[in-house]
Image 1 (cartoon, rainbow, N blue to C red):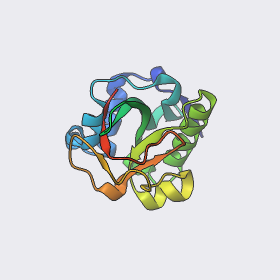
Image 2 (cartoon, rainbow, N blue to C red):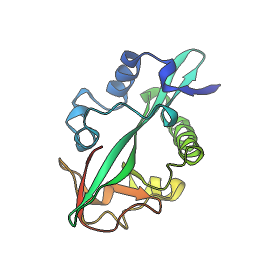
Image 3 (spheres, rainbow, N blue to C red):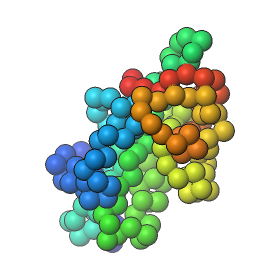
Image 4 (cartoon, rainbow, N blue to C red):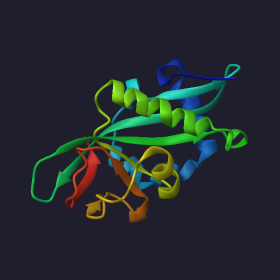
Length: 165
C-alpha cells in the first residue's frame, strides 16, 4: 500500500537516486533545472511515495518567478519533477503524488500560479494545466513550447522570462 509522506522524511540522496532511475543522470541539463536555480523545494508541497518502507516516487515543487518584458515580477511555483520508480510506473503513483501536491497548494494558498514542463495531454486532462498563456514565455534553456504548462489566475498571458525566484 502506498503511503505519501513529506519529502523531508527521506534522505536527499535517496530522492536523487530515484530521480536518476526515473529519468537519467543527464536530467540536470534540462531547462527545468535552470528555471528553478539553486532554490530548495517548497516542503509543504513536496512529497514522497513509500511502499512498505521502499521509496517508489517523489514530487517536488519549487519557488520560481516570471519576469514580464514590460517589467515587474510574478512569483509562481514550479511543479515537478514527478518521479516514479521504473518498475512502478503505470501504477498510479505519479497521479497520487500530483493530486496530493495540488491539494497542499490549495491548502497553502499558492495554487493560483502553478507551472510545469510535461505532457500536455496528461496534465491538461487530469490536472487542468495548459499552454494557453505560456506561448510568449522564454526559459533559460531549450523546451518544447507546447510542454510548458500552467494553471491558476496569477499565470500571466504576456511575453517574459521564467527563472529562479
